[in-house]
Image (cartoon, rainbow, N blue to C red; front, top):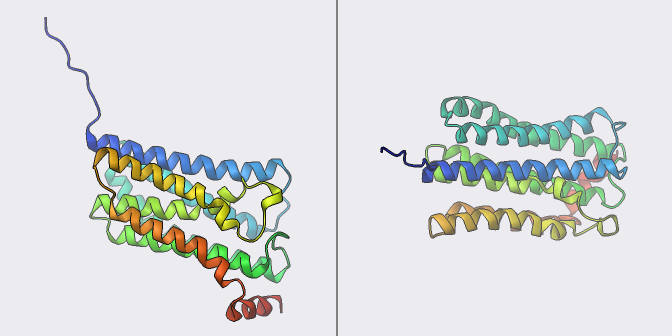
Length: 239
């Protein structure tokens, strides 16, 4: 009697599925953090329009990143490449919205009470610039899929700081929060590195670069907060 051999995903497909599940985990973490703040009353729908637009820009990137990985997992590479044009433009939109919301919040005195305006600018700009640097490095290497997917994953891990920060207990919110959310960022990198070690027996250099950017995005805000140019910028925005 003829038998049908069981069908197992290929190594390529298993890796594609892994990146999809990583994207899903990042999305759930980010949404979960914002929902927690909403549930405990730290966020509301009464915020100014620019706050909502900024939130939508971040969530838009997360949705695009998840969609892109879903397309690859399903083998729809043609649409993945076409949608990549929008994703590249959206990454720049994330930067623009980050600059806008920081400027408007500082100018109107809407910065959170547990952060100084200088510290908030330093945190957000280090995070967004780290995300943008890794993402555009990944875009530049789009013909090398191994680098492309890992660099953009690293950039998105760096970007989810606002979601991770919303899991920090109220009593611990304040300066040095980048150190408190660092383990959350690191956990995602370690999962990705662990997968590579299991399947490739080596750590891909893209993750080393991503970890370096993460360390800089963690350390620099605490070193920049009292820098004269940043203090002068805040004073100018306050008018």
